[in-house]
Length: 238
Image (cartoon, rainbow, N blue to C red; front, top):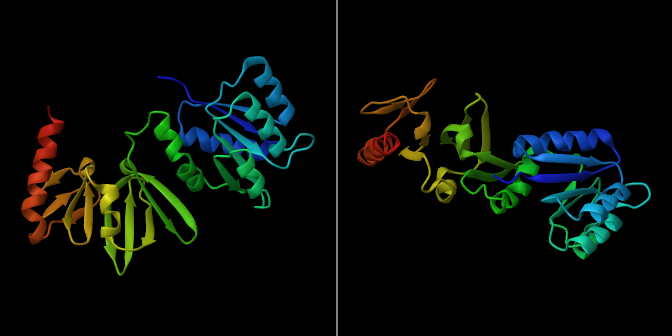
């Protein structure tokens, strides 16, 4: 498998290290190199050519700022994704001029970064990892299917019950996520529940048994739910 290589160019070491940690969580196995100024990055590009799958550039750097660095990067590579970073949005116009892939406002949140990187992960050959996307209270969420045990809804709120015990909420209804759950390991077994079949320990006539939860199977979904889970178990045992 080809190793994903990423460059971070930021004169604030704490910001660069935090971003590196986030990238390692999102892209395990990726190689991330830090540069403290634009000159260092450009010098490497001039010697080696571009070896990076994506480049993160802080705009406010002494000497050659992020915009000027991006312009020079484009001389060496017109297509590498450049993600610009700043504490304000005042350089949005300039970001278009250097064909930036995205523009992140500091402080950067992990969930926002996951959302931004998702199309790049697909491009880099990680399409098999299914995720759920949604926004709640100005926060963008990207949750992997295998992080969720089951999904419930009540009072116009959808609740994502996570493997680690957390519960993540958003406003809406289960049907809002039908397209994102289609042809996945999630099974609709009740008007108010989707269950991740990977997390089911046993099946009863009226419920699925999970490690720490019992998920009801309603009469209207009973035949379809039992058949779908039986087929899932059969395919998994092949």
